[in-house]
Image: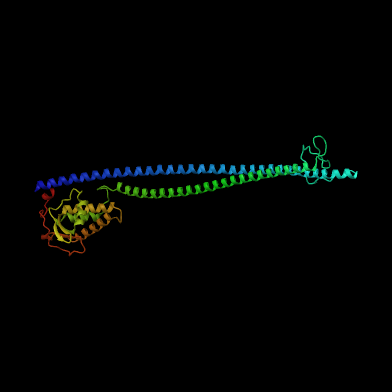
Length: 378
């Protein structure tokens, strides 16, 4: 039986060492994982910012180009309009001179029959002759290449040709204006499309910033939790109050105690206190019904349970499930050890408010019996 206990103690000690080593490795892996996630988020944020800034710069350049093109087209349109208007004015002047020539031609035969020179009709005062025109004066009759006056039948086709020329140039002017208007509409649509694209990019940029802020918030929470785990106090580094020391003294004065609790609660206690070198598992558990068990543990194991629960209360986050369980169990055991006297009955600690307090200690079988200093040393 002693050898078996020694093997069990060695096995638990090896299990404790393995769990502690695995916990440290897990902490290191988690820390490395958070570092990688933070680095990836920083790289993603930088790339997103650079991409958005690049697209915004391109859009600003495109908008400047469109504005320059609009200004250039407006100036070009004004130049074209002024040039075509000048051409039309010249054609109108020529048409006016042609009309005067036709009138003079019709008046020349009548003057010849009457024997008196026909008075020259005044030219259109509103029309100025263009520089360099070699047209005959308004009062002179139209003559052919031989010097003879041209007949009236020859003047009319000439006027029709000039009118056709004016109409053709006017049609060209209207076509040019239509082309310029179409280009202006196309440029306006391009500006609208660029503006819509800029708004879309701005919305994507805002969404990306929101997601990055959420990720950073999550990362900060995880970093805080990791820091709390990393800075978890090691045994012996926690300030121990006098009340806790006195409670450990009361637990050391008892030989055994019976814990009545649920199986899940017992598993929680063994998982926490099993790493402590003073904790020993009882040889058996007594079924009490309704998933409850009765475990007879020594005062030495009870000390390990109290120390473990006290350290868990100090290191766990307040409001966490581990903290709540540790605080409640510690308080319940403290209440059970308030009244002790020499030679009294074994202590029964009921960790179940719904159970009937006080059970027959004989029902919780234990092979340990009253502890002696020799038993504890084994």
